[in-house]
Image 1 (tube, rainbow, N blue to C red):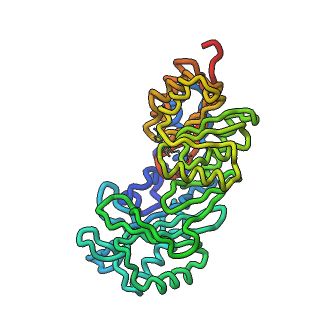
Image 2: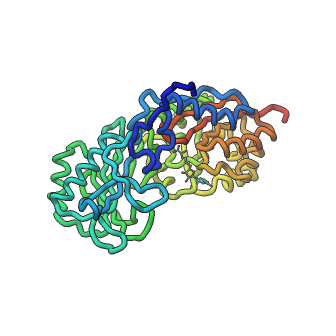
Image 3: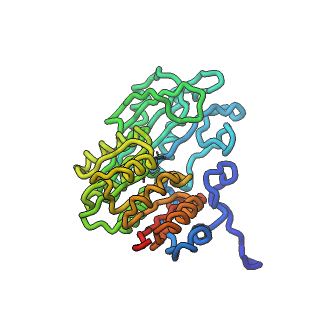
Length: 394
Ligand code: SAH
């Protein structure tokens, strides 16, 4: 930094306490440059790394916001916010730089209503009180809003009037759910759920397809950048309508469902049973009939396919989007055995991507394109799409 250059000060006063954003000490262009360097450090030995795709406006991108509620004994009032990183104390938050504004407004109004309704926050130690967390999800393209009130007990005093008051303040809320979580746990949501208003779910659209989002279902939290990520991945797959595509680690089926119109058929593989259920209903909702989903370990599934002599063993493109730990040896060995012309790797961790690329490029693949996408501005996370193709004769 030049001698007289002013050091950028964090935009958020809670930066250090909250811990949710790691790059608050940088301007947005600095953050992008930092992420680009990180990507190049891990990946440029495989091929040229394209310039990272950033956001036009990197603020308020999170479509899912959750707040914990507690009684602040010192100031004798209810507070809501996030847990301080590595602790169980709450940092009060009214508005956050990266969260959806509307969601934050709803949470603050719920906190205000608690006072007039004499509603107590739930206390885990004494097991007294009522409201534990509030979760708000908003479909950015549909405008639909879900509010989940997570309570410590199922009894909801003055329920009708509370809902009426909340809907008067925010008539654009489309559904309200009560989730009961009486357990001593770090998990926000409990098992028991009751729809109090509206259909119990919201919908959103991504790349022209519609997805149903329930209280518990996983959905990408930055839909604006997610569209760019998915478009890049599907573009890299180079589909013409004749291909069999494997969507491995498919979550609720989003990539496969969006790609299905351009492929002959798609097989999605996912470990989480609830995500598979959502994937099946998402495919139906979009009238996609050339896709099926398998619930199981992606490595197991792929190696079973690689061992079989059936028609099933034919695959043109493997799309893979594993969690942070990257893919498994079994999965990578099966990729090499099946040896499809193209592999598209979507990764949320350049370090494990580096490890897996090293293996695949050693045994028959070459890296063609690498595109970083900034899905989580102000945090240190970076997402990457990588296209690999089979090297003939290897
Ligand atoms: N492609 C999806 C989800 C990616 S997140 C999307 O874009 O939304 C990674 C997914 O891999 C999670 O849904 C997780 O449940 C799943 N997963 C983790 N380990 C797995 C395994 N061994 N086999 C199959 N799926 C796995």
